Image (cartoon, rainbow, N blue to C red; front, side, top):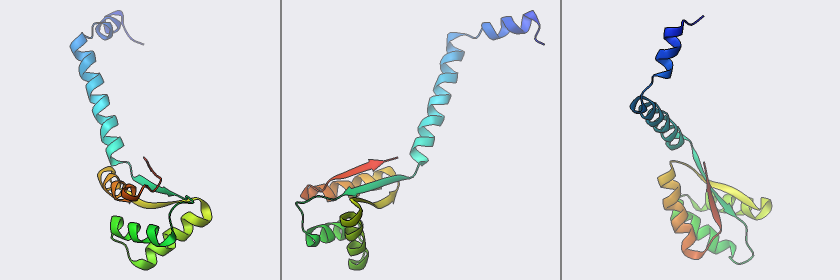
Length: 109
């Protein structure tokens, strides 16, 4: 059981102490967010040909023809597919290449 003086000590946290605790918690949350694996999802559309999607996937991710074909078929059959998983910056870079031809994408963390 806490004594009255312990309760007063807790109540006497200064604004600076409270601000420092808040900053540390925010820093931890941001670090957790950065370390979260990000996924780049490509959605099916009725506009692009298989050849266009395959070519753009190879350009964006550097994957092989076979891998790009597999991903394209998955997008076609399932309506969407994760085409990359990793750091946010890399997902963003690949996303920008896919959007060069207006492919529909989403980055999720």
